[in-house]
Amino acid sequence: MRGSLSRGELAEPKKITVQAGLRPTRRLANAVMKQVFRVLTYVVVAVFAGIVLYIFVRALPVLRLSFITEPPRHGMLEGGVSTCIYGTVALLLLTSALAVPLGVAAAVYLNEFIGWGRRARLVRAAVNNLAGVPSIVFGLFGLGFFVVFLHIGASLLAASLTLAIVVLPIVIVSTEEALKAVPRDYRLGSAALGATRWQTISKVTLPQAVPGIITGTILSIGRVAGETAPILFTGAAFYLPHLPDHPRQQFMELSYHIFAMATQASDITKSMPVAFGTTFVLIALVFAFNLIGILYRAKLRRRKAW
Image 1 (cartoon, helix red, strand yellow):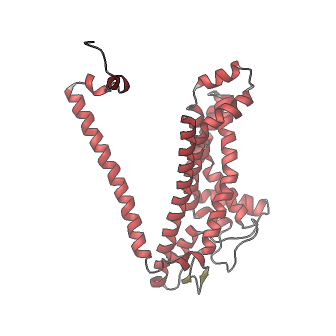
Image 2 (tube, helix red, strand yellow):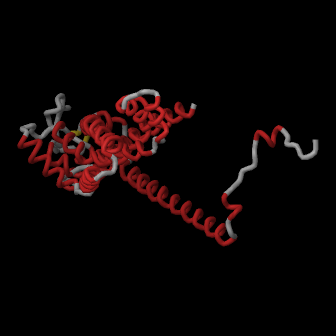
Image 3 (cartoon, rainbow, N blue to C red):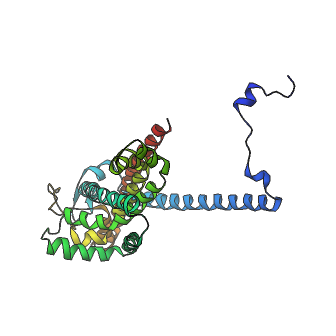
């Protein structure tokens, strides 16, 4: 029949693009800006790749398996950074365990209960101000409150509590944005079926917001791994011959180890390769944590797509 559509045309409808309805000048402007943004993206990736490559080349004299599996020896100029890796992983896990539940609870309260009233604006302003405070101020607060006032002492627990406050705004903001992205129809449908507000939050809203919560956790892990000033006052040790077996003990950490090797070593020619090697290990560790979170988030999104 003339004018009828074939099966292929029905299966693959023609794409209608926004560009077709634009003027030639606007289409040209859109194409130019697209290329500009693409170039800028490639520039950012190239700069990051160049930094990592430079660190890797400078770290080659010390990069070997023993550098990861052995503790530091002889003024930390020999051996490896196994105790620093252990302390960093413990710090990341404990800080995430403290900050993520509290941040998620605060975001749920802000988005699901108090909305956008005066009280909510005050709380959001406090969160934004908290995000802009320098980390060294948090370190002094942790020293005065957790270490001295609460008598926790300089330890892994005090450092984790301090860093939990540092990353709390990141978790709150990312979780609240994820909750806002959940369609309102989901909440209305749950209420229409007779569910309570808490049942709607726990069974409908939060499961849909899990990818956004994971994003906030990934960002907080990167922030925690790179902080030196807070742990300098609250628990990081210059050198420890053994691994901490309790949260109330001091610990070694990769970022503080980099600082020590770059500024306080007796022989700078021997310490700089160690500092670059520790830096490369820290980047690889953060990348591994981020990759795990990204893969898990992608798995959740694929499951929801079905």
